[in-house]
Image (tube, each protein chain N blue to C red):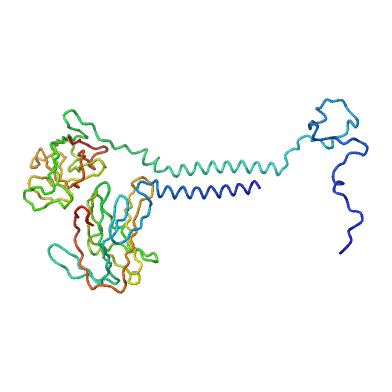
Length: 241
Length: 193
């Protein structure tokens, strides 16, 4: 082991120390007031720079200025990121949802008829034919657990863009049971489609069209809904009494 | 020390965000988790569809049924897999498109419904179940570990993910039949699958 050098500099030698013979101040008891602003009577040693008290605030160093700039840039990046994320994630809302017209049923008049884009429809009948209906001209019967419904609509149209419309029985749970699906298409007394266009002179479409609908036995239809791809928006909904 | 706490805070935020996303995926979507895994003989959700696979078989040839004349069996360079499937919807009549119906092998290969057998999916209604056969042509080495993926691919709620069903078929590579006759679609009674 080597011997330590004889003359080791003391740690306190690296900081300023008051001249010998002066009383040492008590930092805890005196507020750190700059000497220039204190206005106190000069005491012994007046004019000398304060040694233990706090001096004037140091000017910001280059490192501190760089750190504050980095913090500002971080906040800007965070804001830009959040705004960009919100803009991208709201694309469907901005481009599709806001631009689309809300599909609402048209109003029904006092006579129970609704007119929409040249088509006037009223509900004549919506009847549950039961699980074993007597259907002329066919042997078809609903599957077990289902009923057949008969829907009769009265329609008048002046809209040349319409040909056939979709008719559905709607229950309280929002289930749509579309007419002429899952049933026999050729049943005497029933139409195989609901004609809603302007009738041609040689058309044999009756004024009141009957449609066949397959409905689960537990369903309780509350309305008849008429829709068409020919409608620009909206649809017709007729309540079942 | 301050930077260390910031890193810890960001890591905790990432974990919380991940948990919240999973909770939203599993609880807050109208149809439950995005992916549902079923089994043969069970109902599986693929909102707005509910899907039920009752049988899956493999064969060298299939016989496509028809109303008037029965054609000769149709062969394949691979193996036919015939899935007897029924489904219904929850809201309105809908058809399952063939693009969303694939068999996925254990190593990730996907085999779509064959366009040589006619049916690539059919129309079903709200609680109106319709059953039929779907025929797939698959590579012979993919028989083991096949899974039916039923993906409606419908954007019901804008850009939100739609639910799809995965149903493992548990096919035995050693049990390949000579011929399977495909059945026509059939509307089922209440409670039937």
